[in-house]
Each structure stands twice: as structure tokens, then as C-alpha cells.
Amino acid sequence: MKIEYSKPPHPREHRLIFKNVDRVGWDPSIECYINEGGYDDLKKALKMEPSKITEEVKQSGLRGRGGAGFPTGMKWTFIPPNNTKPVYLICNCDESEPGTFKDRYIVHQDPHQLIEGMIISAYAVGANTAFIYMREEFPEAAIICEKAIEDARAKGFLGKDILGTGFDLEIYVHRGAAAYICGEETGLIESLEGKRPYPRIKPPYFPAALGLYMCPTIVNNVESLCHVKHIIRMGGDEYAKLGKPRNTGTRILCVSGDVKNPGYFEIEVGKLTMRELLYEVCGGPKDGREFKAVIPGGSSSKILRCDEVFKLKNPDNSEKDLSFWDIALDFDSLAACGSMAGSGGVIVMDDSRSMSWVLNNINAFYAHESCGQCTPCREGSSWMKKISDRLVEGKASAEDLETLEQVAYQIDGRTICAFGEASSWPVEAIIAKFREELLEDTSESNSGVAHNPEAEAQRRFLIDHDSFPA
Ligand SMILES: Cc1cc2nc3c(=O)[nH]c(=O)nc-3n(C[C@H](O)[C@H](O)[C@H](O)COP(=O)(O)O)c2cc1C
Ligand code: SF4
Image 1 (cartoon, helix red, strand yellow):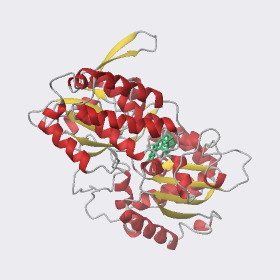
Image 2 (cartoon, helix red, strand yellow):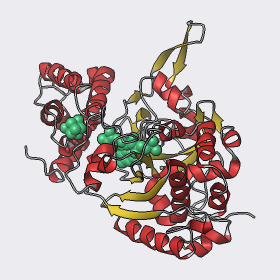
Image 3 (cartoon, helix red, strand yellow):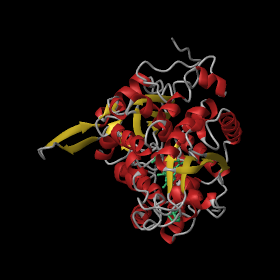
Image 4 (cartoon, rainbow, N blue to C red):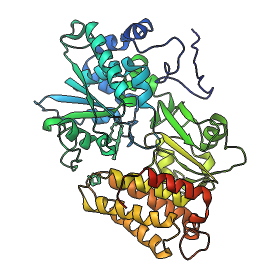
């Protein structure tokens, strides 16, 4: 059957998770979902042993799509084997990483795909209670998911004795607290417990052992949980044929910024290079512009220059050159180039962008979002913003840049949660890769960004929209 879309996918896409997004005649109702074989994968899964499901997920090679790219099946096996406490499953629908806009389309347009994935996953890990932690700013999605849960319950897919198998599961939607840190899994858990979302220190608080109410808890991203139902349908081995070894399946890339056709694109992991994504899929740079830099996995991933050439090691330890344009879009290739695939948020900048402004924009976000629990992050993120405020005003000295770099390195690796790295890595990378350009904006130079009308307008916009005290 040919599927029609209101916004047709690019021919290089492989739609698995986004099969029904923008689909003509599709709606989020359970009837629509069941007409297309919805919940058949659940019926298949409930005939399997829970451990066999985990085995299939391990076999599939699925890596988490929330940011860290941790293998999903392996995470599930971290629940202590002799556990006697309740186990919880949490779907992380906080989607707070700047540049990322994929989970919201799943919960708005195809909520039953997520619920089916969650029921199968809960059955696999032995959870009888599950939560969808919904970003506060997605009020409509919360209503859609609550309706979907009610309808799934009415059909016997949720509640007691699901489909006569003896398995019980309740799913609750929990509205978030409108803070970036609520997306960090232990901050999320604290928030779900009704507290401030202060992240917990790991060890000992690895959620799979000591999570919600100090019970074993599996936290997975929306997209990761959706993949589980496809793994059950296809089988782990078949699923693993999508993408590349260690980088399997499909993933949704969210491309924003200076390209002709921004948007979401579901691709086989690692099957496209940067060049193919930016020129073929996204239509190239805007007229009269050239690509300058790309943040490949959400704002916390390290920036890549479009003219960079990376020295990589071959298996025999010899070296090879890899140009930015030839980087394959997968977890391992981006890590080898010093950045990460993260949450799939690809932010593209062309030669009209001032890197001082980019730096300041990112710093403003992290200074605003630090939970304030640890000193290096609380003070450091605010110092970094203040220094880059001066930089965009043309008032920072070259020494200020050195201080900025030092502050970033003093945060990195010295905090309770990975927000420390999320805020310091962009600074470290932008300074290392664009030092000359930033120096041109210092007070010692005559060409401060304050003299650049576009950058000045961007700066004013930032000041007007930023509630952070100066
Ligand atoms: C500061 C911070 C913010 C995060 N925000 C999100 C988020 O919005 N959504 C998400 O799925 N994961 C987010 N994560 C990652 C989660 O902590 C966790 O690793 C993820 O939900 C696990 O799911 P996965 O294994 O399926 O990727 C964030 C991590 C950090 C450090
Ligand atoms: S690193 Fe930052 S966000 Fe994370 S716990 Fe410390 S202060 Fe909070």
C-alpha cells in the first residue's frame, strides 16, 4: 500500500518510527492504529519470555536515542538479579536538548506506537508501573497520551491481566517541571517524586539499581522505546541489518539553522555522510552563503568546523585523514571526530554567523538552566555567560578568553551530573576551533561584533528574551 504524506519524506529516508508522521489520513486514535496492525507486536511479545525480549533488544544493537547512546538491552540487564522491590519504567519525553524536535511528533501523531513499545519494554523488565515524563511545554501531548492510555486500557492492552496473560501494567502521564535538567534521568526521577529536580550522584544512584523511590528503574527516551516494538516484529538480527555494526537501526535527525530545507529526517544510522545530509537531503546552504560549522547532536555536543580534517586511527594503528564532509552520521564516527551523535539535533551555521554570538547564545541557555547544586556548574556557567556577554559587546579582552577557557575546563568532569560537560564542551570546542575569530571581537581588536549590525541585532534579541540577571 502506498503511503501518502502531507510533507513527503526525502528519498534517502528510511521511515520506521516516523512512518505515520505527516501521513495523509492518519490520526492518533486507537482505531487508526489497530487498522494498521497496531498492538500485534505486543501480542507477539506477550507470548515470549521476558528475558527473550531483552535478548532480542540486545541482539538488535539498539543504542539509546536520548543523548548518551547507551545500549538499551544492556541497560535493562543492570536491574539486580535478586531484586525484590517493584521495578519502574520511565519514558523520558522531556525533549529539552536545544536543537532536538522529534519525540514531540511521536507523542502528538502516533502515541500508540510509544505505548505499545512501553508495554513490551515494561513486560521485559518486569515493571507493573510506568510513567511518561512529559515536558511541561507539551500540554497537548499530555492530553493525547492520556486519551491513548485510556483507549488502550479499554481494549485490554493495559490494566490488570493484559490480554489474559496475567501481566498487569498501568501507565501514568506526569507533566514535567519546565526545566532542562528534568531531562537528566536522575533529576527527572527526583521531579517525579515531587521534589526539586536535583540530579543524584552516580554511583550509587544508577537508576537501574536505585531509581524511583530507591527501586530499580529503567529510563529510556521516547524514540528508543518505540524502536522496541519494531525489534520484536522484525527480530533483533533483522533489525541489526539496518544501519551499521554497533550503530544499528534508524534514527531521526532534526536539522535546524542555515540550510535550505531544515526539518526531521529518519535515516539508517551511519548511512549518510555530512555532505549527503547537508547538500542532498537539506538542499545545501542558503543562497549566497557557505556552510561554516555544525553542532551534530544537540547544543551540548562539540561543534565541528566544515573545513576540518580529522586524523583517525586505522585498526592497524596507522593514521588516515577524514574530512568533515565524509563523516558518517553515527555514534562512533562522530565520537572519533571528537563530538557526539547525542540527541540527533543537527544545528547548522553558515558564514553569516558570528561565533561570539553562537557562544553567547549557548552560554545564556546553560547559565539559565543550571540547577545550582554544584559550585563549578552554578558559578561557572554564569561566569561563562558574563564573559561572553562582554565578548559580544566588544568589551572582552584577550585575557578574558583565556579565563573563559579555563572556567570551562574547571567545570568539565567536576560536577554531579553531565550538565557540567554539556555546558563546558561547547565553550571548549568553540574557543579551540574559532580562537582567531573570537579574538577579532575582543577589545584589543578594532572589529568587535558590536560593529556588526546583524550580530548586534541578535545580541539585543538575546538580552530582551533573557530573564537571567546581568
Ligand atoms: C542535562 C541533561 C539533559 C537531558 N535531557 C534529556 C531529554 O530531554 N530527553 C532524553 O531522552 N534524555 C535526556 N538526557 C539523557 C537522560 O539522562 C538519559 O540518559 C536518557 O533518557 C536515557 O534514555 P536512552 O538510553 O533511551 O537514550 C539528558 C541528559 C542530561 C545530562
Ligand atoms: S552539574 Fe549543574 S545541573 Fe548537574 S547537578 Fe551540578 S549544578 Fe546541577
